[in-house]
Amino acid sequence: MNQEIDHLRGKIREVDERVLKLIKHRLDLAQKIGNLKKSHHLPITDTSVEKQVIDHALSVCKTLGLDERLAERLINLLMAESVKIQGKSIAGRSSYLYEIFEMAEELESKGAKIVRMDAGEPDFTLSDPVKNIAKSAIDTKGLTSYVSSRGLSDLREAIADNLNADFGVDIQPNQVLITPGGKYAVFAGILASLSPLDRAVVPAPCWPVYEECVMLANGRTDYIHTTLEDEWAIDTQKIKDAFDAGAKLLILNNPCNPTGKIMSEENLREIVSLAAQKNVLILSDEVYSAYAFKNFKSILQVHDNKFICTNSFSKKFGMTGWRIGYVVADSETISKIHKILQVSVTCVPGFIQKAALAALKSAEKNILKKEIKNRVEHACKELNRLPISYFKPEGAMYIFPEVKIKNFNSHDFAKKLLIKERVAVSPGVAFGNYPGYIRLAVTTSLANIDEGIKRMGNLIKSSS
Ligand code: PLP
Image (cartoon, rainbow, N blue to C red; front, side, top):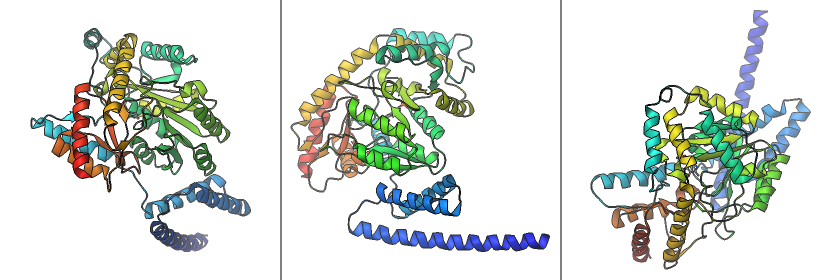
């Protein structure tokens, strides 16, 4: 008996050896393909080829009687390793944002006056009456101890009421969870949606944090490249191809950081319908929905399947450091996200939630929207004097121009601009394969915006 088991174990080791040799052979082939792609300037990933690989593997599975989900996961792992070998990962791009942010902070700490157009941090804060409510909440019994990990019921009710009034929908408070910032809402949403090796599709340029969250969930990101020439519209055929190749999650950012694009209702509905056909979950990050300067449709209005919608008090009310946001989702998904909140953060402090509730009930948001829109328009007028092309933002608080000078490198330019001209902007390379672009945040006064763009113009002139 023992001898037979030992014999079979020995056979398994032989099989493992053969499998590993085959994997090595596969990676060597992938490397050769990668070299050829590089020399012919071809993109590293091609969803239609990946779909063929998956389809082929699934048909082999059928013949062998092997579990299809297992095969899909193994093939996804092999493809992810091949992509890695070919050098595609853009993970870690948020470090480009932090680099400029930290350099600017350090210069300021030494007394330098910097025009800050880098971080997406509004320059306004809560009004005094709202702050006073927050201060008294600290003295209120029960608001400095543990509270429900779902969030305070009065805040969740107010959020649901606001969304229902703004979008004409019927969100129930039990579909809302309070999170420590919009970033955590995105992270928990992604973690709840992906199993290891699952793929998430993300239109680029985009906030770099999405890919990094997908990596923490051990998933893989497939980017859909969008262009300035197409006014940053998302090609639905590319989305369809990515869904056909087995994507499990689509991450949208609407209005978009960094482009300021608002998806047209037609584009959004088409994508939602494709996702429903393929049972792909959509996570729509709508942290900039308060700054929509044209008709904006929320995922809450158009979804017809499972969905996740994330939002935040950071941008709308200038509450970045308070760390409070929320997630809205269908009831099955909300339970998964709730579990993640329960075991990771326990709860957002009650007194912070009371401040958010007071902000929500104040009328501040429309004044701020007018102010941000005015700044965007003003900045665009000033930018028209420079050798750049840009899409006039329809929302959010950024402009993402392409700088039309030879050999422009956004990373070098952003550092030089900060050191020489004392202006902080974010390099386009932080948002994907957009090294010719920079992102300007209109999170400072009109006078600062004028000055920042003027100095940027000086550097462009001296570099061209
Ligand atoms: N989503 C996008 C697209 C963002 O740009 C940001 C912040 O810059 C966030 C989410 C998260 O913001 P917070 O965590 O401060 O709510």
